[in-house]
Length: 517
Image 1 (tube, helix red, strand yellow):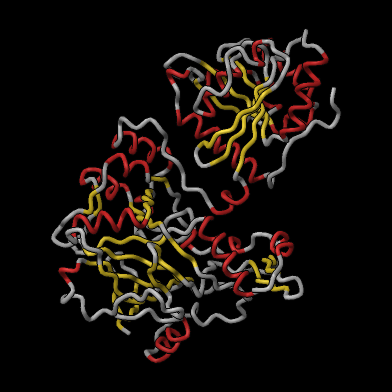
Image 2 (cartoon, helix red, strand yellow; image 1 turned 30 degrees about the vertical axis):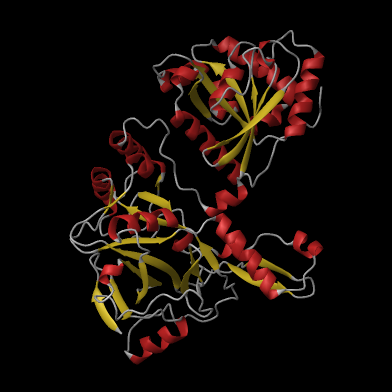
């Protein structure tokens, strides 16, 4: 086992030409007298050892790297070396597939009824940085389909031939094991011949490649062991039992892909494709950067991306956590407010299409309606309701109550116009309380709408709404341009993310009207 400090100053012990299992690594650590307390941690609770079939890869970078990628329209080694590094991107789909495989292999005789009763559990063990929405390397993450990357590499560096994959090395850091796969052109066969070819069928290998996917068999998928795997053979079930005590720390492993790109060459992609696959990442608790200032906050990152891709209308999105993906897959919203405030146009702006007619419920018709659309990774359903006023009939109020109880919304959006008077807003509040009851304010957010191309001053609008209204909703408010000619994707994104965070904080709790009119 060799030792070096990598270019980030991290102490790395490594073995070339092999992917060593943890038991072998422990022997090597003892043999060379290395210090690593994590790999010898004891009392680790039982955890699953699944098989992930991964079809996407990710590349994290910081501000300077992002600017270079935009200028080059692709990826190269910025340190005058010859390798461009990627890692496997394991998402909810791959986790669900791996869970199904694990259950079928463990309980081959389980019935359809038992399968239907099985709750998702594997994602709770996916707590290591390999699965995290956060980054140790920088604020910007590019996630590409694996086949798109390999096809681009084949066309640009292999004259259209399939690239060669080899077992590169196993690296042991303080609490991390990295299994590296080398990808190179057939023209460099002789140069890299000492590295074994990556298998496509070895069932005991840590990583193989088959049918356009990397097959990864992690031995340590948990960052902290907060859950214990429970196997119930009597019912052919597996479950994750949360542990009350402080979780023990252990080693975690992952797979990295090193593309051989020599002589300062660039693996190029279309500029729009780069932007489409770009997300923002918050820094992990532990980073590989020596200077935390290399991580940007979301506002600075948004401004930088707008400068680098000035013609791109959609906002920069944050990378979503597994917890959010599993607990907030859909978002249900109800629009309420006085007649003529633009609820139908607001619903269209949120969904990004003409979902509600301007002559819909908001214009005096007595029936509610709702529409759904995928919006920034969420299935968003918006209900448009008739306008509420002092003259609203009991039939209209009953229709709204029925709509809310059928939809079971996660949030109620009280739509008010920018520049409306406090008297008008408080009148809307009285009508909302009459129909929904006082409990509605726990789920309500104020949505201030406007149609001009220039956004209003938020502080001015905040003062105009008055403290009474803001206090009722816990000071939760947003501004939104509901003019289709001035659609602002960033405003929609901020609203959807804020509701998603509220849903997650409430554990998926929904609102219903207990006493209908």
